[in-house]
Every structure is written in structure tokens, then in C-alpha cells.
Amino acid sequence: MSFLLRKLPFALVAIAFALIAVALFSGQWGGIKRVFEFYGVTNEEVLSSIRLLTAIIFSVAAILGALALRFERAVKPLAILLILISLVPLLSLLGSGHWIDSLGGFPAIGSGQGIIKYFALLTLGVTWLYRDSLSPLKLIWLNYFPVGLVLLWIGGMKFTALEAEGIEGLVSTSPLMSWLYSVFSVQMASNLIGIYDLIALAILALGIYIRQLFWPGLLLCAAVFITTQTFLYSYPGSWVAPWQLSSSGIFIIKDLWFIANLVLILGFRNSMEKY
Image (cartoon, rainbow, N blue to C red):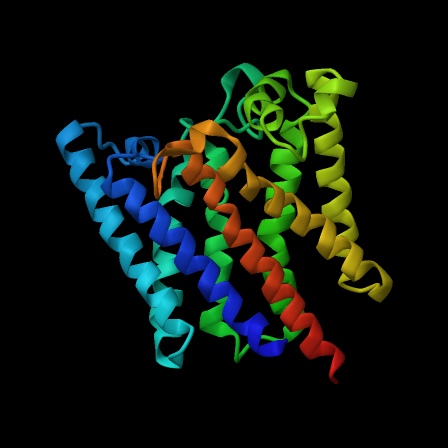
């Protein structure tokens, strides 16, 4: 089990980056345009070059993730690259392009929903870079941070009409969640999803200290990100061609990073219980 917990996060990172890289090479943009508009880049030719460069960098990250499964010396370069990759989009949150002015701007987030997922990537990089110098408890909280942040932020957005309408296409095509619309209105279904997200993050936070709540909290949070991965199969707009994610698919596949965070939390929790 400990071997699996150590290796699975590397596999998840490698898979996510490989699929995103293929999508970028095939012409998908993800959130690249909005990110680099923050840096003042608007020329289409320059943006296209940046997209290809990003695809190459993501390919390198995928390769390093795969190598880290077997070779320890690949872990540090992977960690540094993940930190560098994540900082570029995260800094763009300082601009106004990702925020929804009609909902008051901050903390009402629009395109930035895909950007805040890079906090998961950032903490993975920091974890692998400093895992030998930080205590298991600190590493647990480090990896809880992006999970709790995204569930709080995006979960909170579920109470807005804009977000409720935005997820309707995903939820209505999901065999796991479409039943909600048979029982509840679009807004009420979104509210319930938001309530679930908030409960999940709270129980996991308490479970870090209260042993009886750890597994319920971990499983509740994991269910969120595992369910989103099923959208890759149920939502028609996830792919533009076999093995080529759409921009929506890129948004969805990033949740593998949060699953990696949760796996690391479990691993560090197990190491704490040994002492």
C-alpha cells in the first residue's frame, strides 16, 4: 500500500500532463490566452508560439512524472518544473480578467476556476521538493490547502445562478448526477452540490486531527474529483477527437492533481500513525 501511495501521484501527474500536451499540440487553448493577456501578450502569432511552447513543457512534465515512478533522481526536477509551471497562471489571478464583475469581482471567479487548480500543482511540487525537511503534519496541511481552497471557492460559486447554469451541461449528461434535475431545480441541484463540497472540506479538515473523521472526509473529497473525471466519458464536449481533449476536457482532467493531493495526504497520515 505504501508503495502505491508513493507512486500513484506521479502517475496521475504524468497522465494529466500527457493528455493536456496532446490537446495543446492539436490546437486547443485551455486558458492560455486569458493567462497571457494578463502579461500583455495579445498577438495571435505570439500566443500560438506560446501554446506550442507550453505543450512542449507539459510534455517534459509528463515524461518526468513517468520517470519518477522508477527513478528517484527524476523527482526533484519534476518538483521544480511543477512549481514554475504553476506560478505563471497563478500570478494572472492578480489581474481582473478571471473575475466576474457582475457578481462583484473577487471572490466571484469565472475563467479563473481553471487557474486556481494550479494551486494543487504548486503544492505537489513543494511537497516533493521539501518532503524530507517538513513534518508529515505540515505536508498533510500543505496538500489539504488546494483541496480545501477549490472546494470552498468553487463550491461557494454553486450558490450563484451563473454557476448553476454553467454546470448544467455537465450534470445533465452524467449518469451519476443527472437524477438531481429530476428531483430539484437547476439552482437547487447546484446548491446541494455546493453544500456537499463545503461539508466535505470541513470533515476532512477535522479528520486531520480527529481520527474517526479522516476516512469519511477523505472519501467525500475524493468523490468530488473522481466524479468530475467521469465527465470525460459522459460529457460530449470533453473531446474533439480520440485522445484529444477539448478546452473543457483540459479543465476537467486537472482534477487529477487534486486526487494526487489526497493520495499524498493519505500517505503522510499513515506515516504519522506509525509513530
